[in-house]
Each structure stands twice: as C-alpha cells, then as structure tokens.
Image (cartoon, rainbow, N blue to C red; front, top):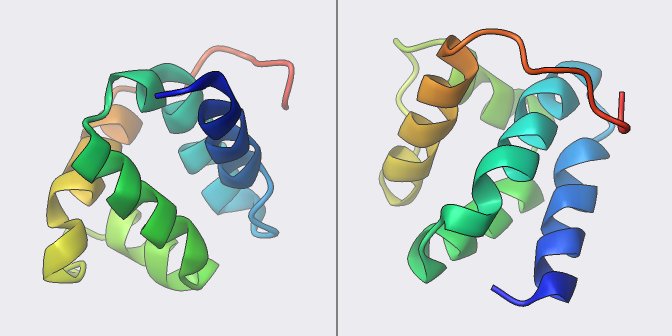
Length: 92
C-alpha cells in the first residue's frame, strides 16, 4: 500500500467522531493496516464510511453479526481489540 493511502486510512480511523470507535480503529490502523491485503483494505475503507455506532457494535458485541462483506476484517479488528489496550500513541 502506498504511503499516502496508508496515512489517509490511519487519519480516518482516528477521527471517526465517536471516541470509542477511534480508540479501537485508530490503533488497529496504526498496527495492522500495512499488513492487510488489498481486499481487506477495501473493506476497511468501506467500514470507515459506515455509521460509527454500527461499526463499533459489530466489533465489541460478538453476538451482533457484521455484514457478510466485512466479517473477515471485523474478525481481525475484534482479535486485535481483545489483545488488550494498545500502547499510547501520538494520536491519543
């Protein structure tokens, strides 16, 4: 992934407007965006276009099924989030 696209992804993940989502999606983007496949990046970008509360609910509530197109990436975010609090970043 080119550096400009990566920076844009990280910026969007940290500035959702819903702090709880920022604190999950931002660290995920910082740590994992570079290693996502092209297909996963496209899905992550689509997730960033969806309402904050929906995306947050799919991540933190395992009983709430995400849309089929996003299941893989939501699974990656859930696993990352379950790993514990991220280290402090310049974004927080």
